[in-house]
Image (cartoon, rainbow, N blue to C red; front, side):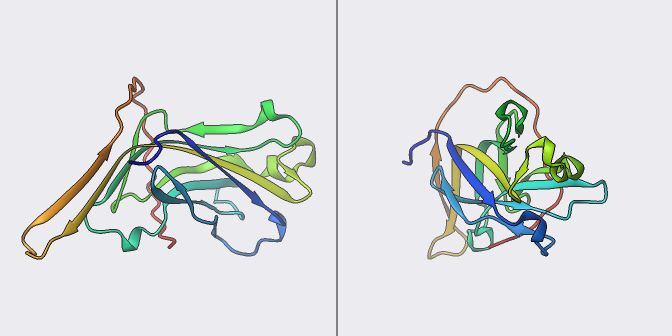
Length: 176
């Protein structure tokens, strides 16, 4: 079994204002024995906010019936005053599966805050985004020799969780 402690990933996005892509994925990182990646939309959305999502990397290659249960947070780091860092979390365990590979926020932070040098989010045209992932359960399904049978492999770490708020991302973007 993997180390079940929380994993923190830091993504430094250099030349943020020079990005021409509509969607920019981070490199893949491993947390809880699973591959993940962040995805941002540097040009924003129709409401002039920066959307940010955390997703399961390589989801197209996972077997039918897979799932990941995790608590997650995403932060845009204030590089001048860390107390002003914008951090949002799942509040409860979120289930990632083939029907919902992403979790995140369509309106994470206003682009006007990013563009204002006095706010401290973009320093030297570099944006820092952090993700923290704590994996509770990983479910793998694979077909055996008999196509009518399916074999499950389950790894679980039990934790107390009294929160009930769960945000489900309705945008599904597959980046492998």
